[in-house]
Length: 383
Ligand SMILES: [Zn+2]
Image 1 (spheres, protein in one colour):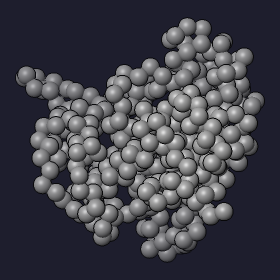
Image 2 (cartoon, helix red, strand yellow):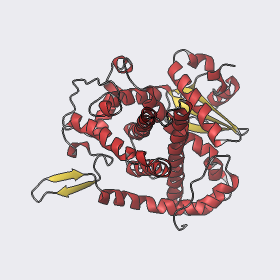
Image 3 (cartoon, helix red, strand yellow):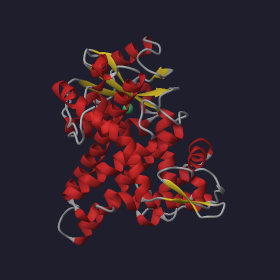
Image 4 (cartoon, rainbow, N blue to C red):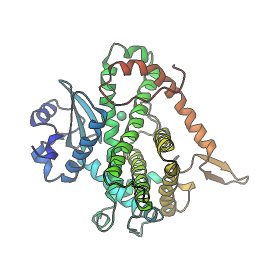
């Protein structure tokens, strides 16, 4: 069996999912390996090596496969199909959309220069547009992506974006979120709709934290394998550059998921700014422990990616996206100035506080029957 087939759902699994209609998947059709290989080669190739890298780290018990799907209402999902078997389904359009957005953003100034990517400026007219309107246009309307792949376009950025998204789905399996929702323990964590939503948002936060650590684990292993971390200055520079790429990839994944969603005030997922704070917080914590020289990378990449959009739209005010500006300050006249500052971060973190408390209460239950992976330690009083 080839390397790419090893992690692909078997014909029997695909048949079972397709036969279930929309019960086991949100897709119109799940492709068999033979059908997916040629037309969706990039999806199969990338998902294969990522699946290879992540579950090894998490030492998952059970069977975890992936499949390419078409016409799904859920761009990326994981489904339990019985017999301890889980299939991550990747909508092919969602995959290519993410690749396109990533390649487009990373080729624009001033970011391109900062991450040593070839700059490919286009006469894009996005004056005064919201950030998510710009990304929608790039994903759904901007046609010619072939020029973006040519030349020096780092694949590590979109590979990190996909690793983040798959890492999130894999965490739901590894941490047994799916079984927990079906268990006898779950009712005490959903006494009413608000309580249920709090529990679900907390599990999503856990999946985001785990996805972030997976990105670090997978790409740091590369750095080691390539001996980037050898004591030479050149090796250190290469490692720092790779870190910029993978942090950027995770941020682009979050921006992309917001681009696809129509639900702007989700109750079962943390709001998008809280997801960003969780992700950047995990990066910062890991860097602080392992390499003080990398501590500023998460903030440096946030600023750089936002600057791309500021240059496209003309101002920070027009972007209307919390990762760009988290507070609005009146300038005393009739004008409001958008800022990104510590107060806005504090307000954002406050929204995460109840999730951390819920996590502290959930932890012993999840720890008792997880399949693998590392659960984040509790950092708040249980509620
Ligand atoms: Zn999720």
